[in-house]
Image (cartoon, rainbow, N blue to C red; front, side, top):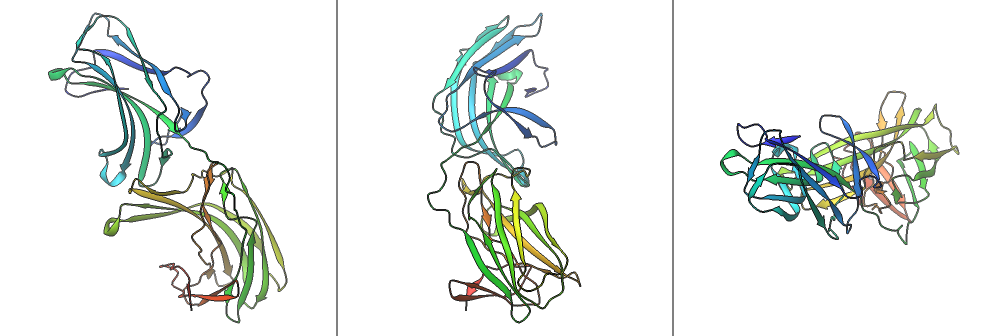
Length: 339
């Protein structure tokens, strides 16, 4: 779509094509209006080249003060719509001031472009990469055309990827042990583990495993946190008994996960958590939250350990011979601290 600043209708059509458009991988991308489009996929340090075509409307000419193409990496906060924070900005001048009477094509190239962050579309923020072509026309208003593309960056698996194993519970009521085969996952990985019931004096009716995404935007007093449950997987239906073991095998590929983003350009962060939720016969929910589990990119997702908590109970976690106590405030979900 052409965007015209001013009251005049565009006197030309602008098209942007990538030089390897026919062979480059296309990935689905959901726009703000919910529509899904296919966009070309790039990664950092790649060359981005192509052509810009300007075609005047039949019977008209285009007088301009210069044509340029920009490669922009932008962050937009939804509470501050319209204001973009540029973290990448490259410019190529395509044409000097003059007139265009017929279709004209301009080649462009940006070599080994540094694109440190991945494309992200969240609840309150978006990070995008875009090619922007501007035909400057002075009083007549500039004509602008945009072409979005997606960036994903990859890195090798971590050299150390320890398993997660911890015992948690409520004193004299519930004592369970959970174990996961590793602590860091890529986006097409499989979570494998087990839940072992050591003591059960609460009438549990079901147990679920949830994947939650926590998006933090802003900083200081202006920080806004949005938590979204992306997936809910039932592990058990019915009351467990002492000594029972529940296996876990959760495939991540069906879910719309992104890599963990840590303080991107001092604007936002995205973390993922695994919530292990137990519900008793009175519909009380028990969960426990563990953070500080980091991700790796193949594409990665950062998954914290399982969670158990209940507002009126003090929860204990036993790990490496030490005992930790949670204050029991399910709303605050404070980090467990040693006693």
